[in-house]
Amino acid sequence: MSTIMAVENYLIPLLEEAEIAHHIPGRIRLRFNHSIVTKLPKLNGIEKEIQKVANQIEAIKNIRLNLFAGSVVVQYDTDILPHDFWQEVVGEKDVEQLKEKARTLLPGLQF
Image (tube, rainbow, N blue to C red; front, side, top):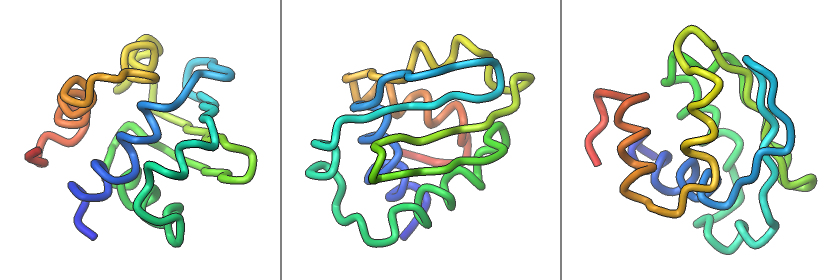
């Protein structure tokens, strides 16, 4: 799967349905409603796809997805992504706004 497809199929749906559970600079835990499962094309291999996307974002140091707990923990570089960035994108329902943020993070991608 291409990175663009992975962002659109996995990362954006997660951010749309996420809430910030805990956040300190450099580490954020997001919780999502289990209804997110219906938005994802298939769960088989989602961790691998999310990791591929994260590996292409310089600011993301580590990402752990726990589907059973309905959470994702992201460790990130605060020099690249400011603390306030997450407030802007998490829970954003406007897909175009989320795509714009993804373009900012992944300038080589076209949506």
